[in-house]
Image (cartoon, rainbow, N blue to C red):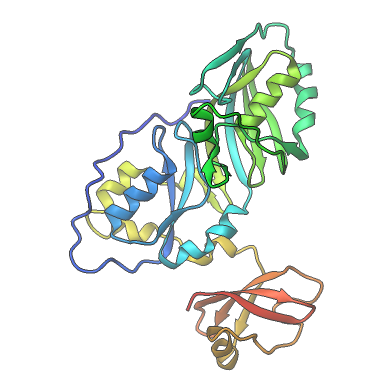
Length: 319
């Protein structure tokens, strides 16, 4: 697997935008280069665009590359739904090398001979990591303990023992094998640490292992083949061309059922009251617990949440 080469971080000086901050609502499908933190990307977009409300949907480690959706304006309100989406990765696992961070950025704590490992043993070991599994995050992670990131505690010498969490691995396949390296395709739920998977796979095989390279190729509806690099955006921020790349906030929700609210119900929703309609709209029961609602003009109105069998209440209003 050939990963996208690292890209130098453009100068992060404030953009040459005069007057009040721009009002922009949308999602950029951005491709994070190696060496950037997720916060670097957010800061870059905020400064270059002039939009104050900017956030990302799902942290990537600095050494990782790939899809990092950036939400601007009111689109930041759909981040929680986008973070719930499935994610797809291409990973290179290095067997025979174990580190304290579970990747090559850490200190090597064990070196073993991965020669005896076979393809059959790898396939059998991978079976343990498919479906619903209990996974322990790395001690060097952004998870917090008493308000402090675990990696800060670990770096300061504190003993860190993260709690296991339930995650789902929907797909886990070997793309190529060139021992001591394995190329994996992984589709998983939120909260899954690919570094932990690499570490745990090495432990099951008895030789240790760590993550050598990682590229995220999809987050929900956003795929790598349509993502844009910051170096391209850098030029487009000089004008308004970058705005043409924005996806609307409801792009994240297109797999949900939809409801159209007439003027009276649209007014009720805008003012935080439950719409009055039958159980046939937006969906017949039983059904999902959320839907997206639109005005008669087709404007994205709100996220509605089901209460009981037939009642729906506005969870987030966008108009």
